[in-house]
Length: 274
Image (cartoon, one colour):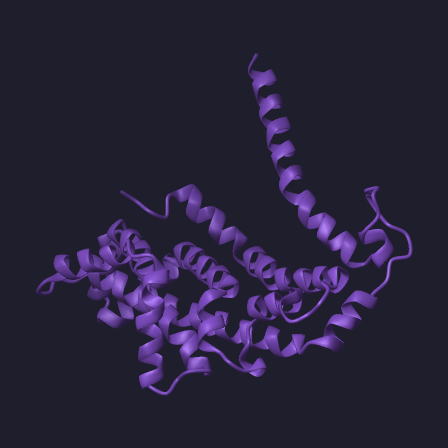
């Protein structure tokens, strides 16, 4: 009976994995197919006459390299500063005592309950007053201060062994040295989890880049992909669109694979402790 349950569990997991991976496989498969194969009534595992024409055309028709660079720059810089600020703030809320600490943390938690769409108009007017519209600063600054990252890092540092910090201070480490040499390196699984979530969220962001940019040279990939889909065209070039979609997913998959070990360890160890 126990073996049957284990076998049934594996079969269920394999079925779920196949159902989730098949759409992605179909997208990659069709991105190398010609137009006739894309619109054929029969579905095949592999299509003949595979071609790179779709990838060639998409680079010729839109500045995809520029879109890719903009998205990569914005997502990378946002992730870096989010991790830095969230780690500092989380450690301060977990280990330091200062006036109104609980009130400030409660305020941060309340901001997590506010839908992001509510902040778009005030943020836009703020960026306009600062003369940052259509700039990298406008794309990056609103995303580097988030309550989720501070909450995640605080919960980790609350469970961090105080004995390690006390040993470091006995050895002559000050607060900053204890943070950078002891606490932060041991928080790497939680940092990797926060980095993955932040990078993926920023990379997929559509509404804010659409509103705050007004030139083609500042567009990010999601915005460029939406424009290419047919907003300003009479027809949708599905082969090129599929090729562009495949290119869009490569960095996200790469970031997840790079931090997969730490991400899984954080989940297994309980990155968010009660």
